[in-house]
Length: 182
Image 1 (cartoon, rainbow, N blue to C red):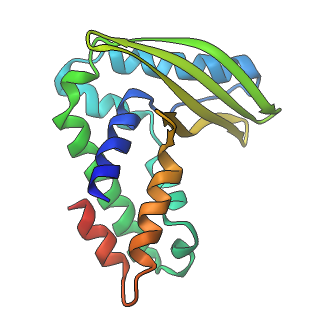
Image 2: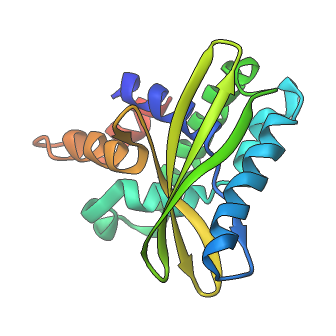
């Protein structure tokens, strides 16, 4: 799980979540471009703040818990969300030098329906280029990135599988998952 979390955190840091007030398809592209620019222009010591300011960690953590989240007490779920965010912050801070100064360009958009799109970006770094696909959904008049894919791995889906693998073990509890983030 740790390896998958590290990869997923790196993916999050290069493709942040953002929201915008407009619900047209072009605003989905604009929010992705704007959030990525904000992160790329951040100094190394501020990258984690920039990334986390654009990420709805509560939504990502809740999706990650999947069906197991429904049976958690509110206090347990809150502890999980806090542990998830703390873990992301530590991973982003440890790798901040990789995220500052990147160039991100939107290269394609695919509307799945009026409220669900996939935005493809090209990320250029000194080490080379990579494509990142962002799944963007409009909810209550605001667009937000709910998942991203790098090298064929969708972040939220992978994290959900990792958490389910732990919680699906006999006798496992949310404490076991939280310990993985520690």
